[in-house]
Amino acid sequence: MDCNPLSQFSQQLFAFFTQPEDESAGDAGAVAPLRLRRCGEIIRYHNENLAEQGDLSLAATSRYWQNFAKRQGRGLRRDMDVLLPGEEQRQELVRQSKEWRFPLCEITLLHKERYALHFQRRPIIDYVLKAVLIQGADYGRPQKTEHSPTMCLRLQAEAGATDGSQELRFYRLQQLYQIMLRLVDYSPWRLVEAKDQKEDTLFVNVELQKCSQMETKNHVCLVSGPVLEPVKKTATAMVLDNYLEMRSMHMRLMAMHRNGIRPAGLCNIDVLMKRLGAAAVIVDLFEVRHATAASVVRNGLGSSKGASYILYNSARLETLLRTFGGQVHAGVYEPLPPLGEIDLRVLEDDMDWQLIYGYLLTFPELLESLMDQVKQGQCGVHLLVRFIDSLASTFSRYYRHKKVLVQKRDQLMPILYARIYLIMAVRQIMNVALSLLGIEPVDYV
Image (cartoon, rainbow, N blue to C red; front, side, top):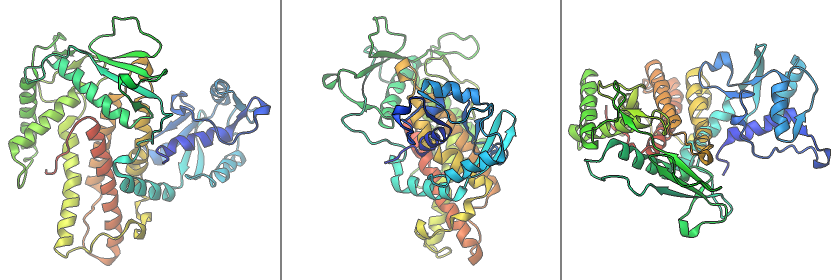
């Protein structure tokens, strides 16, 4: 299963501009897997202002590419000051990309330092919706074999109490360990017990402070930072139960301010507020780097829009799909046709495209990047929180500007069905991302 198609595109792009310095190696069209997202600014994928900035942009100055290529044992195919000096060279790249999974349609000069590249939208829309909805929770999850690199993940032995009297720093430590277990499942690493270790198994200790023991070659510490009071910046004395109760109250007040989160059926309001409060605590603790001090939130607002905003939009997704299902049951709409019968051209509009390209397509790339620096004792949990927050914000704009449940008219049905499939895909990505943090989505607004 090709779980990261953007990585494949980056490699194809890199192979187009470069060639092996050692001629005896042959002109390999396939470049060995590269961490091209770690190569500075030569390739930058965008998720905002795509019409103006391009779906991605490239550094125009050849020396930036040359410096990176040299570290890979490659050199530029053309000895020029700029990468694509004229329209002829740009069209050559567009023609070559027609052989790739995701072909380009246009290359423009963004400014003298960068080129803006635009994809043909239909192939990506078709790929993303099918991949997300067919693969489900496996979207972005790499297949593992006996040859996959192995990791042994261990939690600091003294992790404090395990009930509601637990200090927040210990709760943050335990949650970091649980999140790491889930992220490893979506990484190239294969988790093993200490008894099953191999010669090159990486041992990762999740601790409150950097290991006191001398680190060996295959041993790293993943540090969980302290939890502080917001003003004094001293260690908080608040325990888990008290903080959960306080954040649940914040969620209740915000829900009332929005004219109420109105649960139905078995969804009790107190249970719902506790779930929202627990989600808020996770966001509070991990919206900053895991080794950085986190601050308790006493005024109801965090540095990001927070769990209330995220789950409010998660509930909107559920409500849209539940309402559609109810309308089908009532005979207002016909049942949803198979995805293969849907006219996906209606999703080529800029707002649909931003969700599909900026978030759904890039989700596997994000998952892969979270563990990029685990050997240096770092994991990008905060990047996952940022992704979810940004996805919720983008969907909120989409919800305000696009009517999904349109009137039953023959000419509007293709739009309805295409947008329902898009909403289903957004919900799938949102729910997987939340589950990696240990957050349960909500069903009702």
